[in-house]
Image (cartoon, rainbow, N blue to C red; front, top):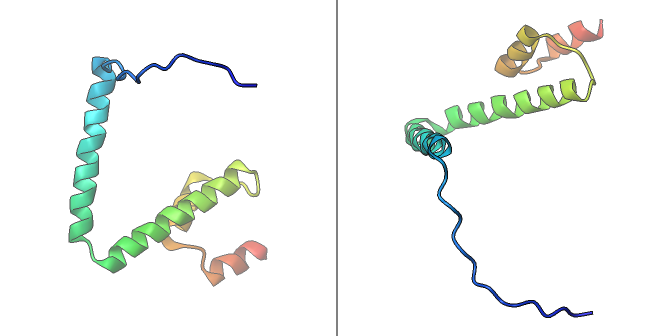
Length: 93
């Protein structure tokens, strides 16, 4: 069942209000600093930062899904250091 709709060209979005525009400009500034930082960091530093970020997301996802209950300090330690074999044994005991 086809419906004949009149064709209209797409109109530009209206200008953002001042508060949102300033916030978006800040994000652009942060992105530029991030890009500059990446050019100064070694590949091993970038990889370590990536691993910390992935650990944080995995740990926080588990907390949200109520797989385990950790306080903020333990979460930060696991993100910074990773889950070592010793920590896994201590938790199981």
